[in-house]
Amino acid sequence: MTRKYVFLLLTGFSVSMILGAWAFEFIGGLPPCKLCYYQRYPHWVAAGAGALALVSGVTLLAYVAALGVVTSGALALFHSGVERGWWEGPSTCTSGDITGMSADDLFNQIMNAPLVRCDEIPWQMLGLSMANYNALLSLGAALLWVYAIKRLA
Image (cartoon, one colour):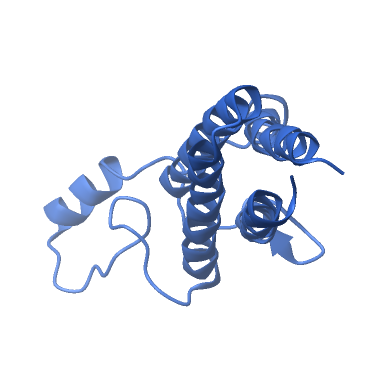
């Protein structure tokens, strides 16, 4: 297996992650939350850098692609913890403490709340959410990027 072939597969991986997210959004009717969007951006970087590394053979671009998928995986790990209630997510994305709020403040918080919350799991398979799958797959892809860079010629 050549380095170029693995670069092609891993670039395709990031493209497929973006296409999969769009499929869930536009075909499946599951709009993304803010953290879901944040997980997509590094895959765009990885896809672009991977494509450029594939064409040019510049190793630095492959490292950028690896950094992109590891960033998406790290964001997905954070999102997984928010979904599971292990820690709190961004205040613009999850519910907050309403103790001591006036009725007007509570009403304003409700009216300004995002439509999709980061601390709810809209879809899961085998007990794992989309963020869980992104974390596992992206971190695995990052390892494959590094392997391809270091070990394959």
